[in-house]
Image 1 (spheres, rainbow, N blue to C red):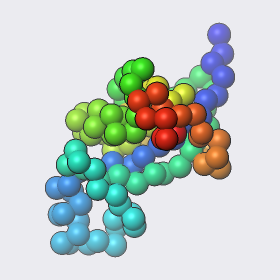
Image 2: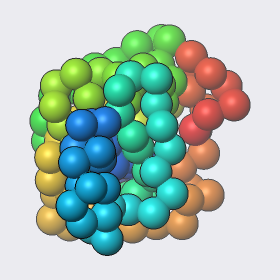
Image 3: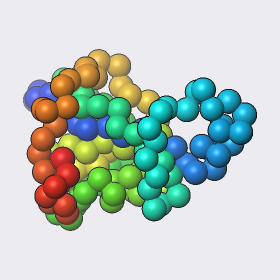
Length: 122
């Protein structure tokens, strides 16, 4: 059974300790425009990706919730020490340290399904 390729919005997560350490040594390797999170992490949107057929863009742990929002997903992935958090179909959160080969960057407008935990987020 083939699983159709899905779209996932992916965020880069960095712990506060990593950001502080890098900013005192070599801030040039930090992404610009990092947004602080109340969960002791910083994050930046990497973009909207089309997942490879029969594969996931992020292959770490996973959670789904009828109350899912970006904050919950960031906190969930950060607690597992993952670098990336990805929201799919508004209610599914995937975590990983590497973006799977074959995941293709798409225009952000395609990742537009609202999150049930916060309808203003997608």
